[in-house]
Length: 158
Image (cartoon, rainbow, N blue to C red):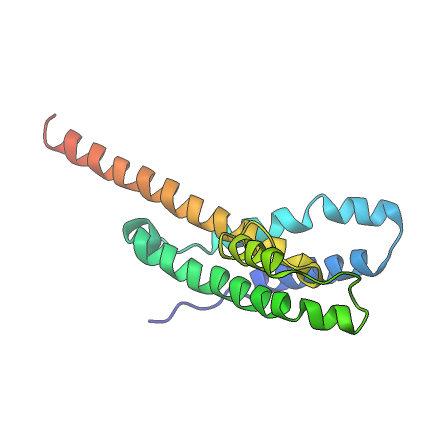
């Protein structure tokens, strides 16, 4: 039987997204300070809440799925914007062009998720969510397996 989707989580994400857009569009300082206290932690909390238990048993599968879902789009779009950087410079969107050496360094930084492109500033969230998800899967998987081993040991009379 298919699990029913929890719409309250979708509503919570929608509220957080709307508040984020409001803050980035310009709002009173007191409101943005208030919203910034909870909107990103809320996204991480929801992502953690939705983390499937099967990833604790099949950590490799879970990590692969997270890499496919977060890492691949990050690399794809950041590389596209990197290769368009000098075109954007020609169109006077950016002030300086990249040399071949700078482009090579930036490619390596994109692949290792340690850098990005200006126009994709919000992609920092994908980097953070990728590492938080992988770290959570590894830690929770270890704790789950340790708990399982402890239970086997205790039940075995050890």
